[in-house]
Image 1 (cartoon, rainbow, N blue to C red):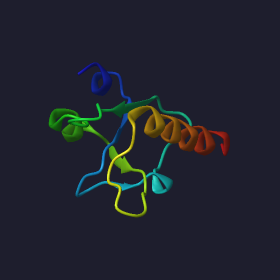
Image 2 (image 1 turned 60 degrees about the horizontal axis):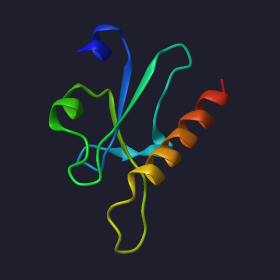
Image 3 (image 1 turned 45 degrees about the horizontal axis):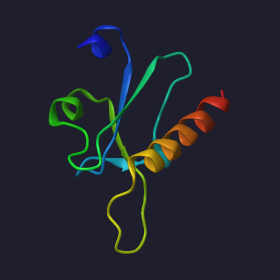
Length: 87
């Protein structure tokens, strides 16, 4: 794909068996980043999950297991920005 051919670090935002908390996401300041966000019904597709360098999720408490995609994107971009500003 374009992302892998052009050396992007692909980060998928998806709750999966192998996902890590977004706070533990590891990024590099000198690498291009692609944040992949799925839709609210089916999430990120399996082909994208397979090529992702990291799969991250947002911790949620209580009985809720999903979040509005706009809210999730905002949280993910906030976390990415915070991590990049530390460099």
